[in-house]
Length: 459
Ligand code: ARG
Image (cartoon, rainbow, N blue to C red; front, top):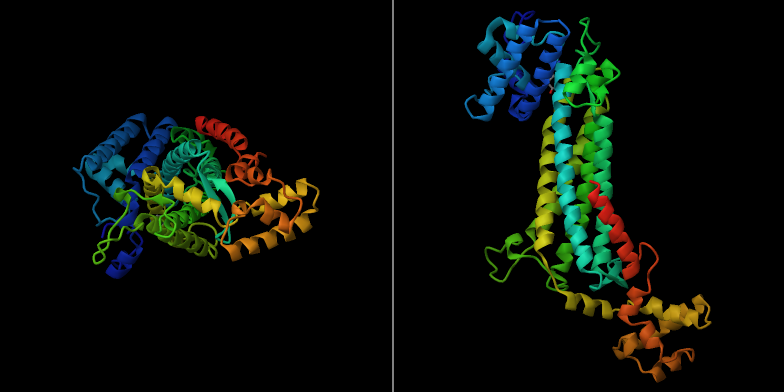
């Protein structure tokens, strides 16, 4: 047991209490951020004359040495310390002697841990944004390559109207663009430095909080010391944004699983992203898509868990807040893995364009266009809807598609049909005529692709 705070105690901590309380097994994940924060704090203490310049330099040199040794594997982060803050401070004192004891002047572990977690999270937000960007680039490429890859669009998982693969993928492009922007917003809102808040009420030392904020690349210091040590909103926002990312990935995964099924065969996942069965030799399973879908639950769980942890905590710091770490770390690692794997999976999958097109051609996806044809020839829409409904019934009874009917058969149902109906309801026409912005027609899609091109070149 190695603790920083034994002074007022007359008894040793019970071993079970110590273990229950300790956080070193997980907060060692941000040793780098802890040392970086301490270097900024020591620099500021030297600049303001709270400690001498020499003392500051000695502390900084010691901290850099600890960082280098941990990175090189020459210094093990020992679990005999309560937390990463105690490990770094005790190692510093071991190495440079009494000067090391001055590092914690004007600081509490409460503002220190708030800082470490923010620094760690800020780097993760940048890393997740980078992965989303990679995914956006893959989607953009798929869109550009598939402007005329026809497929059915679905509602209720029933064929509805024809679209293109570019248009379908474009829907996810919009979702992940919003996800990217959400992460940028979170970064901007969280990027204020809590260091200097002390335990909860600031300190009596003339700390230069502007300086430490600047040294650590924050926009500025936080404005209320009690909020600074007890704010976990940015983690809740991030967990919420990550839950939304997972929800998007999970929906897309579900579609990949459906498209890759023996019944659909719209796509084929690459062997490198599929797995086999231990008993059924013929199997090639979409495990990656299923895992991405499955892991979504963990990330949602982390969000609900932290919201629940935070809801009854009076100001300011309480130990409950230590619970923010394991679940947020797990969620961040999970999300990074999911995005990277998902991106690899969709950039290697093969499209079975013929199957997609054949599927779009049957199932009456052109029924709306047939009704629109009647409308353009003077039939009120509600009547046209009824006529085409009858036509579909006739087709089902005779096992034919609408465009496989003869003009005589069509005229039997409505005399308005002329031989230009075939062109009006061809798959190509159904898609190509839909050219208002946001629709699957090629002109509309090209405009969107251009907008996306600009979005991608600005991120
Ligand atoms: N391990 C603690 C946490 O993660 C660090 C802060 C400890 N502060 C305290 N007053 N016990 O929240």
